[in-house]
Amino acid sequence: MARNDLYLSILKSEARRHKGKAAWALDQGMSRLAKIHQKQADDALRELADSYQAALPERNDHA
Image (cartoon, rainbow, N blue to C red; front, top):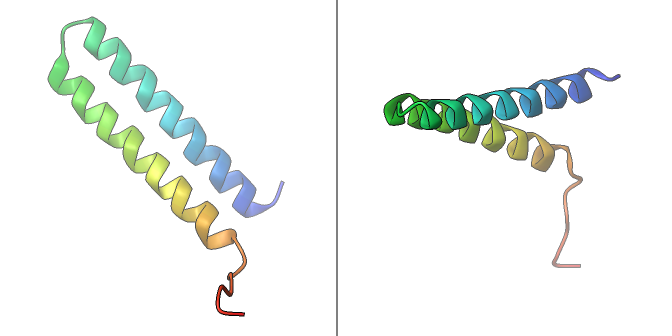
């Protein structure tokens, strides 16, 4: 597995982990903790999207 693939895999795992923790915290009535984990999940997903976007070749729409 290439280094970039490993990084993307770790980001996906982090997002899933924080989503699960947010759901658990919400079930336990800890909305503040759920909000923190949801933000961490969103950050991981945003970074993942940015990484995928950076890996795409440049598009030339003016051609």
